[in-house]
Image 1 (spheres, helix red, strand yellow):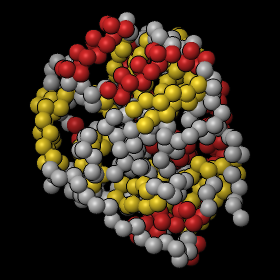
Image 2 (cartoon, one colour):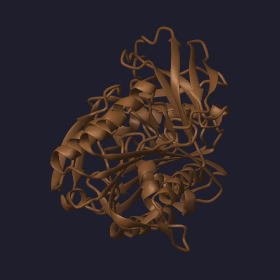
Image 3 (cartoon, helix red, strand yellow):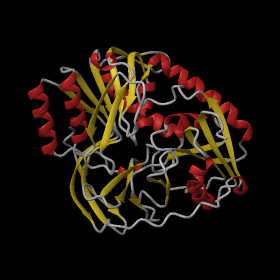
Image 4 (spheres, one colour):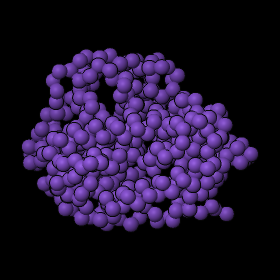
Length: 415
Protein backbone atom coordinates (compact mmCIF):
# COMPACT_ATOMS: atom_id res chain seq x y z
CA UNK A 1 0.00 0.00 0.00
CA UNK A 2 1.09 3.57 -0.71
CA UNK A 3 2.20 4.95 2.68
CA UNK A 4 1.79 8.62 1.61
CA UNK A 5 -1.60 9.13 3.25
CA UNK A 6 -3.43 12.40 3.85
CA UNK A 7 -5.74 12.90 6.81
CA UNK A 8 -9.26 14.04 5.98
CA UNK A 9 -12.46 14.61 7.93
CA UNK A 10 -15.45 13.80 5.74
CA UNK A 11 -18.80 15.21 6.86
CA UNK A 12 -21.98 13.16 7.10
CA UNK A 13 -24.42 16.09 7.29
CA UNK A 14 -26.77 15.98 10.31
CA UNK A 15 -25.27 12.65 11.41
CA UNK A 16 -21.61 13.30 12.21
CA UNK A 17 -18.40 12.68 10.30
CA UNK A 18 -15.75 10.12 9.50
CA UNK A 19 -11.97 10.54 9.70
CA UNK A 20 -9.94 8.76 7.03
CA UNK A 21 -6.35 8.60 5.88
CA UNK A 22 -6.34 8.47 2.09
CA UNK A 23 -3.95 8.47 -0.85
CA UNK A 24 -6.01 11.26 -2.45
CA UNK A 25 -7.54 14.49 -1.17
CA UNK A 26 -10.55 14.90 -3.51
CA UNK A 27 -12.51 11.92 -2.22
CA UNK A 28 -15.82 13.60 -3.16
CA UNK A 29 -15.04 12.86 -6.82
CA UNK A 30 -15.27 9.18 -5.95
CA UNK A 31 -17.86 8.97 -3.17
CA UNK A 32 -20.10 10.81 -0.74
CA UNK A 33 -21.13 9.59 2.69
CA UNK A 34 -24.53 8.42 3.93
CA UNK A 35 -25.98 6.54 6.90
CA UNK A 36 -27.36 3.02 6.76
CA UNK A 37 -30.79 2.56 8.31
CA UNK A 38 -31.03 0.29 11.37
CA UNK A 39 -27.74 -1.50 10.64
CA UNK A 40 -25.79 -2.07 13.84
CA UNK A 41 -22.95 -3.90 12.09
CA UNK A 42 -21.92 -0.88 10.01
CA UNK A 43 -23.82 2.39 10.35
CA UNK A 44 -22.14 4.36 7.54
CA UNK A 45 -22.13 3.97 3.77
CA UNK A 46 -19.69 5.04 1.06
CA UNK A 47 -22.00 6.16 -1.78
CA UNK A 48 -20.10 5.74 -5.02
CA UNK A 49 -20.07 8.50 -7.63
CA UNK A 50 -18.85 5.95 -10.21
CA UNK A 51 -21.04 2.90 -9.75
CA UNK A 52 -24.54 3.87 -10.91
CA UNK A 53 -26.32 2.21 -8.01
CA UNK A 54 -27.41 4.93 -5.60
CA UNK A 55 -26.31 8.05 -7.51
CA UNK A 56 -27.40 8.41 -11.18
CA UNK A 57 -24.47 8.47 -13.61
CA UNK A 58 -23.85 8.72 -17.33
CA UNK A 59 -22.96 5.19 -18.55
CA UNK A 60 -19.43 6.16 -19.60
CA UNK A 61 -18.58 7.10 -16.01
CA UNK A 62 -18.62 3.47 -14.89
CA UNK A 63 -17.14 2.06 -18.09
CA UNK A 64 -14.24 4.53 -18.09
CA UNK A 65 -13.52 3.84 -14.41
CA UNK A 66 -13.50 0.08 -15.03
CA UNK A 67 -11.21 0.55 -18.04
CA UNK A 68 -8.66 2.39 -15.87
CA UNK A 69 -8.74 -0.21 -13.08
CA UNK A 70 -8.50 -3.05 -15.60
CA UNK A 71 -5.48 -1.39 -17.16
CA UNK A 72 -3.79 -1.24 -13.74
CA UNK A 73 -4.34 -4.96 -13.30
CA UNK A 74 -3.37 -5.88 -16.87
CA UNK A 75 -0.11 -3.96 -16.87
CA UNK A 76 0.88 -5.50 -13.54
CA UNK A 77 0.19 -8.94 -15.03
CA UNK A 78 1.98 -8.05 -18.33
CA UNK A 79 -1.09 -8.80 -20.43
CA UNK A 80 -1.19 -7.81 -24.09
CA UNK A 81 -3.73 -5.30 -25.40
CA UNK A 82 -5.35 -5.53 -28.85
CA UNK A 83 -6.51 -2.72 -31.19
CA UNK A 84 -9.86 -2.55 -29.33
CA UNK A 85 -8.11 -1.86 -26.00
CA UNK A 86 -9.11 -5.35 -24.82
CA UNK A 87 -6.64 -7.33 -22.70
CA UNK A 88 -5.87 -10.96 -23.53
CA UNK A 89 -5.77 -13.32 -20.53
CA UNK A 90 -2.63 -15.48 -20.34
CA UNK A 91 -4.20 -17.93 -17.91
CA UNK A 92 -7.71 -19.34 -17.66
CA UNK A 93 -9.47 -16.61 -15.66
CA UNK A 94 -12.74 -16.37 -13.74
CA UNK A 95 -14.07 -12.89 -12.88
CA UNK A 96 -16.49 -12.65 -9.94
CA UNK A 97 -18.64 -9.56 -9.32
CA UNK A 98 -20.32 -9.09 -5.94
CA UNK A 99 -24.10 -8.65 -5.71
CA UNK A 100 -25.93 -6.57 -5.61
CA UNK A 101 -24.02 -3.34 -6.10
CA UNK A 102 -21.13 -4.61 -8.26
CA UNK A 103 -22.96 -6.84 -10.78
CA UNK A 104 -22.66 -4.25 -13.58
CA UNK A 105 -19.19 -3.19 -12.44
CA UNK A 106 -17.97 -6.79 -12.65
CA UNK A 107 -19.53 -7.20 -16.09
CA UNK A 108 -17.91 -3.94 -17.25
CA UNK A 109 -14.52 -5.24 -16.11
CA UNK A 110 -15.22 -8.50 -17.99
CA UNK A 111 -15.86 -6.47 -21.16
CA UNK A 112 -12.19 -5.40 -21.19
CA UNK A 113 -10.88 -8.99 -21.33
CA UNK A 114 -10.79 -11.65 -24.02
CA UNK A 115 -9.33 -15.13 -24.32
CA UNK A 116 -9.96 -17.92 -21.85
CA UNK A 117 -12.06 -15.83 -19.49
CA UNK A 118 -15.52 -16.16 -17.90
CA UNK A 119 -17.65 -13.93 -15.65
CA UNK A 120 -20.14 -14.66 -12.88
CA UNK A 121 -21.74 -12.48 -10.26
CA UNK A 122 -22.82 -13.66 -6.85
CA UNK A 123 -26.52 -13.42 -6.16
CA UNK A 124 -29.17 -13.46 -3.48
CA UNK A 125 -31.59 -15.22 -5.82
CA UNK A 126 -32.12 -18.92 -6.40
CA UNK A 127 -30.68 -19.92 -9.77
CA UNK A 128 -31.47 -22.81 -12.13
CA UNK A 129 -29.11 -24.64 -14.48
CA UNK A 130 -25.90 -24.72 -12.50
CA UNK A 131 -23.12 -27.25 -12.16
CA UNK A 132 -21.34 -25.85 -9.11
CA UNK A 133 -22.50 -23.79 -6.10
CA UNK A 134 -21.60 -22.61 -2.62
CA UNK A 135 -22.65 -19.94 -0.12
CA UNK A 136 -20.66 -17.33 1.80
CA UNK A 137 -21.40 -14.23 3.89
CA UNK A 138 -21.05 -10.47 3.40
CA UNK A 139 -21.08 -9.90 7.14
CA UNK A 140 -21.87 -6.16 7.39
CA UNK A 141 -24.64 -6.19 4.78
CA UNK A 142 -28.39 -5.83 5.31
CA UNK A 143 -28.82 -9.14 3.43
CA UNK A 144 -25.59 -11.00 4.28
CA UNK A 145 -26.08 -14.31 2.46
CA UNK A 146 -24.29 -14.44 -0.88
CA UNK A 147 -24.89 -17.35 -3.27
CA UNK A 148 -22.48 -18.45 -5.98
CA UNK A 149 -23.55 -20.54 -8.99
CA UNK A 150 -21.67 -21.64 -12.11
CA UNK A 151 -23.16 -23.24 -15.22
CA UNK A 152 -19.86 -25.13 -15.65
CA UNK A 153 -17.74 -26.31 -12.74
CA UNK A 154 -14.68 -26.38 -14.99
CA UNK A 155 -14.76 -22.56 -15.09
CA UNK A 156 -13.58 -22.48 -11.48
CA UNK A 157 -11.89 -25.87 -11.33
CA UNK A 158 -9.48 -25.09 -14.18
CA UNK A 159 -9.07 -21.35 -13.54
CA UNK A 160 -5.57 -20.25 -12.57
CA UNK A 161 -6.54 -16.64 -11.92
CA UNK A 162 -9.58 -15.39 -9.97
CA UNK A 163 -10.47 -11.69 -10.29
CA UNK A 164 -12.92 -10.45 -7.63
CA UNK A 165 -14.72 -7.16 -8.36
CA UNK A 166 -16.43 -5.05 -5.69
CA UNK A 167 -16.99 -1.31 -5.47
CA UNK A 168 -15.47 -0.94 -2.01
CA UNK A 169 -13.35 -2.96 0.42
CA UNK A 170 -13.53 -1.88 4.07
CA UNK A 171 -12.08 -4.80 6.04
CA UNK A 172 -11.69 -7.38 3.27
CA UNK A 173 -13.57 -9.99 5.31
CA UNK A 174 -16.13 -10.77 2.58
CA UNK A 175 -13.38 -11.31 0.02
CA UNK A 176 -11.47 -13.48 2.46
CA UNK A 177 -14.66 -15.51 3.01
CA UNK A 178 -15.09 -16.29 -0.67
CA UNK A 179 -11.38 -17.06 -1.14
CA UNK A 180 -11.57 -19.55 1.73
CA UNK A 181 -14.61 -21.19 0.12
CA UNK A 182 -12.89 -21.45 -3.27
CA UNK A 183 -9.71 -22.81 -1.70
CA UNK A 184 -11.69 -25.53 0.09
CA UNK A 185 -12.83 -26.84 -3.28
CA UNK A 186 -9.94 -26.01 -5.61
CA UNK A 187 -6.84 -24.72 -3.79
CA UNK A 188 -3.78 -22.96 -5.14
CA UNK A 189 -5.20 -20.18 -7.31
CA UNK A 190 -3.96 -16.62 -7.77
CA UNK A 191 -6.35 -13.86 -6.66
CA UNK A 192 -6.72 -10.23 -7.74
CA UNK A 193 -9.23 -7.77 -6.31
CA UNK A 194 -10.41 -4.83 -8.42
CA UNK A 195 -12.20 -2.14 -6.41
CA UNK A 196 -12.73 1.62 -6.34
CA UNK A 197 -11.89 2.01 -2.63
CA UNK A 198 -9.54 -0.01 -0.42
CA UNK A 199 -9.93 0.97 3.26
CA UNK A 200 -8.17 -1.97 4.92
CA UNK A 201 -6.52 -1.01 8.18
CA UNK A 202 -3.01 -2.07 9.26
CA UNK A 203 -4.57 -4.96 11.17
CA UNK A 204 -6.55 -6.04 8.09
CA UNK A 205 -3.43 -5.78 5.91
CA UNK A 206 -1.45 -7.89 8.36
CA UNK A 207 -4.27 -10.44 8.46
CA UNK A 208 -4.19 -10.70 4.66
CA UNK A 209 -0.42 -11.05 4.68
CA UNK A 210 -0.59 -13.88 7.23
CA UNK A 211 -3.50 -15.52 5.38
CA UNK A 212 -1.58 -15.39 2.09
CA UNK A 213 1.62 -16.81 3.61
CA UNK A 214 -0.14 -19.59 5.53
CA UNK A 215 -2.06 -20.72 2.44
CA UNK A 216 0.71 -19.96 -0.08
CA UNK A 217 -1.58 -17.59 -1.99
CA UNK A 218 -0.86 -14.60 -4.21
CA UNK A 219 -3.53 -11.95 -3.45
CA UNK A 220 -3.24 -8.49 -5.03
CA UNK A 221 -5.47 -5.41 -4.78
CA UNK A 222 -6.04 -2.75 -7.46
CA UNK A 223 -7.95 0.43 -6.54
CA UNK A 224 -8.26 4.18 -7.08
CA UNK A 225 -8.08 5.02 -3.37
CA UNK A 226 -6.10 3.32 -0.64
CA UNK A 227 -6.20 4.28 3.00
CA UNK A 228 -7.84 3.48 6.29
CA UNK A 229 -10.73 4.63 8.44
CA UNK A 230 -9.43 6.32 11.59
CA UNK A 231 -12.60 7.18 13.52
CA UNK A 232 -16.33 7.11 12.87
CA UNK A 233 -18.76 9.40 14.68
CA UNK A 234 -22.30 8.74 13.50
CA UNK A 235 -25.35 9.40 15.63
CA UNK A 236 -28.71 7.56 15.67
CA UNK A 237 -29.39 5.44 12.61
CA UNK A 238 -32.53 3.80 14.03
CA UNK A 239 -35.57 4.79 11.97
CA UNK A 240 -39.01 3.32 11.50
CA UNK A 241 -40.04 2.60 7.93
CA UNK A 242 -42.75 4.79 6.51
CA UNK A 243 -46.06 3.19 5.66
CA UNK A 244 -46.28 2.02 2.06
CA UNK A 245 -48.92 3.77 -0.03
CA UNK A 246 -52.05 1.84 -0.89
CA UNK A 247 -51.82 1.02 -4.60
CA UNK A 248 -54.82 -1.32 -4.80
CA UNK A 249 -56.82 1.13 -6.94
CA UNK A 250 -53.85 2.38 -8.97
CA UNK A 251 -54.21 2.48 -12.76
CA UNK A 252 -50.78 2.67 -14.40
CA UNK A 253 -51.91 3.45 -17.96
CA UNK A 254 -54.17 6.24 -16.73
CA UNK A 255 -51.08 7.77 -15.14
CA UNK A 256 -49.27 7.73 -18.48
CA UNK A 257 -47.18 4.55 -18.15
CA UNK A 258 -46.26 2.69 -21.35
CA UNK A 259 -45.33 -1.00 -21.22
CA UNK A 260 -42.91 -2.58 -23.69
CA UNK A 261 -42.35 -6.32 -24.12
CA UNK A 262 -39.07 -7.21 -25.86
CA UNK A 263 -40.11 -10.87 -26.08
CA UNK A 264 -36.76 -12.55 -25.43
CA UNK A 265 -37.27 -16.18 -24.39
CA UNK A 266 -37.20 -16.91 -20.63
CA UNK A 267 -34.02 -19.00 -21.01
CA UNK A 268 -32.14 -16.22 -22.87
CA UNK A 269 -28.85 -15.28 -21.23
CA UNK A 270 -29.34 -11.71 -19.93
CA UNK A 271 -27.37 -11.79 -16.69
CA UNK A 272 -24.41 -13.58 -15.13
CA UNK A 273 -26.17 -15.31 -12.23
CA UNK A 274 -24.70 -18.63 -13.32
CA UNK A 275 -21.86 -17.27 -15.44
CA UNK A 276 -21.11 -15.89 -18.90
CA UNK A 277 -18.41 -17.07 -21.28
CA UNK A 278 -16.65 -14.81 -23.78
CA UNK A 279 -18.78 -16.40 -26.52
CA UNK A 280 -22.00 -15.60 -24.64
CA UNK A 281 -20.77 -12.02 -24.06
CA UNK A 282 -21.31 -11.14 -27.72
CA UNK A 283 -24.81 -12.62 -27.68
CA UNK A 284 -25.73 -10.36 -24.75
CA UNK A 285 -24.45 -7.34 -26.70
CA UNK A 286 -26.63 -8.43 -29.62
CA UNK A 287 -29.66 -8.59 -27.31
CA UNK A 288 -28.89 -5.09 -26.01
CA UNK A 289 -28.95 -3.64 -29.52
CA UNK A 290 -32.28 -5.38 -30.24
CA UNK A 291 -33.81 -4.02 -27.01
CA UNK A 292 -32.61 -0.47 -27.71
CA UNK A 293 -33.84 -0.65 -31.33
CA UNK A 294 -37.33 -1.70 -30.19
CA UNK A 295 -37.48 1.03 -27.55
CA UNK A 296 -36.12 4.07 -29.43
CA UNK A 297 -39.27 4.79 -31.52
CA UNK A 298 -41.31 5.28 -28.34
CA UNK A 299 -38.92 7.68 -26.59
CA UNK A 300 -39.69 11.41 -26.53
CA UNK A 301 -37.58 12.87 -23.74
CA UNK A 302 -34.44 15.00 -23.93
CA UNK A 303 -32.98 13.91 -20.58
CA UNK A 304 -33.77 10.40 -19.46
CA UNK A 305 -33.62 8.37 -16.23
CA UNK A 306 -32.77 4.72 -16.89
CA UNK A 307 -33.60 2.57 -13.85
CA UNK A 308 -32.27 -0.94 -13.31
CA UNK A 309 -33.78 -3.32 -10.76
CA UNK A 310 -31.76 -5.03 -8.05
CA UNK A 311 -28.96 -7.14 -9.52
CA UNK A 312 -30.25 -6.48 -13.06
CA UNK A 313 -28.04 -3.51 -13.90
CA UNK A 314 -25.72 -4.28 -16.80
CA UNK A 315 -28.20 -4.59 -19.70
CA UNK A 316 -30.14 -1.38 -18.89
CA UNK A 317 -26.84 0.45 -18.33
CA UNK A 318 -25.52 -0.67 -21.74
CA UNK A 319 -28.87 0.10 -23.38
CA UNK A 320 -28.49 3.66 -22.13
CA UNK A 321 -25.41 3.97 -24.36
CA UNK A 322 -27.55 3.27 -27.46
CA UNK A 323 -30.49 5.54 -26.59
CA UNK A 324 -30.66 9.12 -27.95
CA UNK A 325 -30.06 12.33 -26.01
CA UNK A 326 -28.81 12.23 -22.39
CA UNK A 327 -29.31 9.15 -20.21
CA UNK A 328 -28.59 8.81 -16.48
CA UNK A 329 -28.57 5.39 -14.87
CA UNK A 330 -29.09 4.05 -11.36
CA UNK A 331 -30.90 1.05 -9.85
CA UNK A 332 -33.19 -0.13 -7.10
CA UNK A 333 -31.74 -1.85 -4.06
CA UNK A 334 -32.76 -3.88 -1.04
CA UNK A 335 -30.34 -1.96 1.23
CA UNK A 336 -31.97 0.56 3.60
CA UNK A 337 -30.32 3.98 3.97
CA UNK A 338 -31.40 7.34 5.36
CA UNK A 339 -32.01 10.27 2.99
CA UNK A 340 -30.87 13.83 3.68
CA UNK A 341 -31.15 16.60 1.09
CA UNK A 342 -27.72 18.14 1.69
CA UNK A 343 -25.23 18.76 -1.12
CA UNK A 344 -22.48 16.86 0.74
CA UNK A 345 -24.68 13.85 1.54
CA UNK A 346 -24.81 10.85 -0.79
CA UNK A 347 -28.52 9.94 -0.62
CA UNK A 348 -30.69 13.00 -1.04
CA UNK A 349 -34.04 11.30 -1.68
CA UNK A 350 -35.44 7.83 -1.12
CA UNK A 351 -38.56 6.03 -2.27
CA UNK A 352 -39.75 2.83 -0.64
CA UNK A 353 -41.90 0.22 -2.36
CA UNK A 354 -42.87 -3.45 -2.61
CA UNK A 355 -40.31 -5.46 -4.59
CA UNK A 356 -41.87 -6.26 -8.00
CA UNK A 357 -40.25 -9.72 -8.22
CA UNK A 358 -40.79 -10.69 -4.55
CA UNK A 359 -43.84 -9.03 -2.95
CA UNK A 360 -42.85 -10.47 0.43
CA UNK A 361 -40.13 -7.81 0.85
CA UNK A 362 -39.58 -4.13 0.13
CA UNK A 363 -36.93 -2.21 -1.80
CA UNK A 364 -35.60 1.32 -2.28
CA UNK A 365 -34.63 3.70 -5.05
CA UNK A 366 -32.35 6.59 -4.13
CA UNK A 367 -31.72 10.02 -5.64
CA UNK A 368 -34.71 9.65 -7.95
CA UNK A 369 -34.64 12.31 -10.67
CA UNK A 370 -32.14 14.60 -8.96
CA UNK A 371 -30.86 15.26 -12.50
CA UNK A 372 -34.17 16.82 -13.62
CA UNK A 373 -35.09 14.27 -16.31
CA UNK A 374 -38.30 14.49 -18.34
CA UNK A 375 -38.51 10.74 -19.11
CA UNK A 376 -38.05 7.54 -17.09
CA UNK A 377 -37.44 4.01 -18.38
CA UNK A 378 -37.71 1.23 -15.79
CA UNK A 379 -36.10 -2.06 -16.85
CA UNK A 380 -37.29 -5.47 -15.64
CA UNK A 381 -35.36 -8.61 -16.60
CA UNK A 382 -38.45 -10.83 -16.58
CA UNK A 383 -42.13 -10.15 -17.13
CA UNK A 384 -44.13 -9.72 -13.92
CA UNK A 385 -47.83 -8.90 -13.43
CA UNK A 386 -48.30 -5.16 -13.88
CA UNK A 387 -49.90 -4.88 -10.45
CA UNK A 388 -46.59 -5.98 -8.89
CA UNK A 389 -45.15 -2.69 -10.15
CA UNK A 390 -47.94 -0.38 -9.02
CA UNK A 391 -46.36 0.52 -5.70
CA UNK A 392 -43.10 1.57 -7.40
CA UNK A 393 -44.81 3.33 -10.33
CA UNK A 394 -46.99 5.27 -7.92
CA UNK A 395 -43.87 6.55 -6.17
CA UNK A 396 -42.21 7.48 -9.48
CA UNK A 397 -45.30 9.46 -10.50
CA UNK A 398 -44.38 12.15 -7.98
CA UNK A 399 -40.91 12.75 -9.48
CA UNK A 400 -41.89 15.01 -12.37
CA UNK A 401 -41.45 12.71 -15.36
CA UNK A 402 -43.51 13.61 -18.44
CA UNK A 403 -42.91 10.35 -20.32
CA UNK A 404 -42.91 7.04 -18.45
CA UNK A 405 -41.99 3.53 -19.62
CA UNK A 406 -41.56 0.00 -18.26
CA UNK A 407 -39.45 -2.42 -20.33
CA UNK A 408 -39.78 -6.19 -19.84
CA UNK A 409 -36.74 -7.78 -21.42
CA UNK A 410 -37.81 -11.46 -21.28
CA UNK A 411 -41.17 -13.14 -21.57
CA UNK A 412 -44.48 -12.26 -23.17
CA UNK A 413 -47.26 -10.07 -21.88
CA UNK A 414 -49.13 -11.76 -19.05
CA UNK A 415 -52.88 -12.12 -19.55
